[in-house]
Length: 300
Image (cartoon, rainbow, N blue to C red):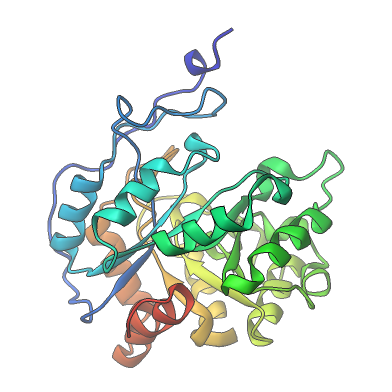
């Protein structure tokens, strides 16, 4: 059976654009977004679990302008596998506005030093690893594989971004205490709100933050809680990561919100939700401007 026929089409992001009530600080960075398509130019991988609607660079740039966000980090989506062409083309279109997080084969020896250098020159500043899909059947982390990747990218000053359910790893802090590069955890550690902030894996994530070993993306609250905006179950997680180390936090829209199976959030409302969670203007500026400039090597 052709796998493309079994990959369901995602609902599209809300087309209507409007500005948030909050005014974001100058130089703000959306630290987590994806460019998908046009599929006719950048076809999706045969092996994929969903099919996104075209979410083009032009549409995303129009959204950024409406939201009042100046810069962005484009993260390679799983539907492209290790084919980074769409993301790299977007980076090339405006090197000052964009940085990237790429995906390479799980075998780090499959990519040469020159290829990594070329990715760096293009604006890539990290690699993404989807642990949800590559963890072995026993639930264990492919830790040696991750270490090998980390050693390859360490000379470039890159980080490793992990998409993983931290609640599944109660020894998270011990496992990564001496990791070769910084770690970035998407979606508040991708643990469902039902597990609570006292969960051992989430507490391990907070420990890594406190010890300057990990960054956390304040992204995708709709992915890890029940109900729709304002995602009340996620407020304790937001408060917890802020208290742990606000200097290790970044924010992102998660546009175009692929695989959302509940009410599609409006990006202006997500900006206002962030404003509600982070009411101190200096802290907002740290999370939206200063922190991502450090992590992604944007001009300050």
